[in-house]
Amino acid sequence: MSNAPLYEITGNMKGLEKLAEEGELDSQTIDDTFEAIEGEFNEKALALITVSNRFNDDMEILDKEIKRLTARKNVMKNKKDSMIEYLRYNMEESGITKIECPVMTITLAKGRDVVIVDDPEAVDEDYVEIEMVTKVDKKGLLKALKDLPEGETMEGCHLEKSKSSVRIK
Image (cartoon, rainbow, N blue to C red; front, side, top):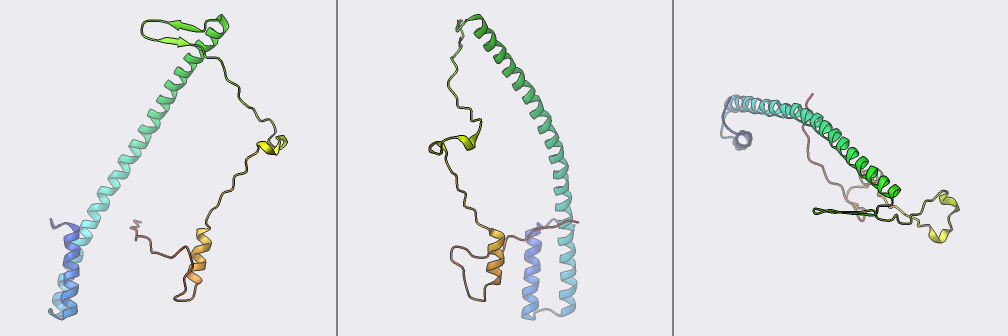
């Protein structure tokens, strides 16, 4: 396998194509050279995909570790919340509203008024907000733009080609 980077091999292929168009080389030389360059290209592509697949393995391991750490974090958060709720309940029950010590002050704050809506349909319309969501139908636009006669445009949008993609089967 060549030590040349893939972009260099690609440049060699383009250069060979240019020489072929200009007729500077005979067809056998072009075929042989192109076959050799294409072999190098294929080897580099295979090496890139092999490394890429190793990233997939690493990402699976990381996903599992993220799940494990997230579960551990949730356990800690629940314990913390439970301890604070335990303290809140007991401060409330005992009538203690403030605890002062050298490093901190713990205060039991009074609850605030909150609205609980039992039946949204029964609430006076003066207190109801209506949200309107505008969304562009991109699938419909794609079809409409493709169906336009040559040279015609549609205001506010246009077609572009997305980047090509690599598929591995």
